[in-house]
Image (cartoon, rainbow, N blue to C red; front, side, top):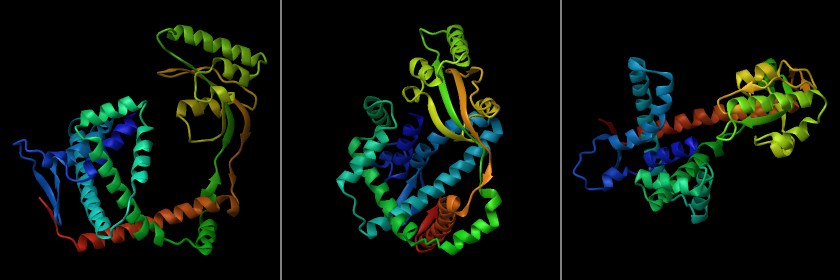
Length: 319
């Protein structure tokens, strides 16, 4: 849900002018930047910043928090200026967006919330109507289409570039150590105390080590997302899971079941079916990843050059 709320806040802040400009409240809404015929207000920036403040508070405090907040504030203001410029260019280019695209975007965002009721509760809490939200989604889609046309659509990655990158970086392209993993999740809740769940976890581990099929145990006892798939996570590479999980997982031998691992939400039990050592991937195996890396670097460079040109040709005043 946190992700969904963050998306909403960013859309509110990076869309058109803040609702504060559209309401006659008698409270001054300070203009922080003028971008051609548009403005970025203090309310706009505060809305964008609010989704980052909570995360910053988890890592920093005191003067360090103040410094980091100011750094993020400056970065967001610059991003908002760039978004204004992109939206203005998209409108000049008459980028078309149909209602189906907007509805699909709305559907995608709704899916990040536990339920539609919670989604609409957040909308109501924000003070932004669904119509305004749809308008802003439409503008974000317009912006994305323009960036696709001006940046991504003009980036080409050649076979020669891919082969050259592979020759220079083949050691860096090693496939990491991986395991074919199964897991069982036993959660704490009102009816299952920590002691009761620990006892159940110990019992499940004992059954598995005595020869009971781990997949059947997962189907019967697990409360995790893979419970109906025999607890099968498929192959998991080193670096993809929590450190406390990996410490256990990658110490197990094929066929071995680990001790229960306690977390804030319950106990996790893992079994390793198969292990694969790290190895240098062939060019064929690595080609897609290399192409994506080169494409990303080229697109970022082209985007920055394009933004510099937009700023050079625009009237921008930061107050």
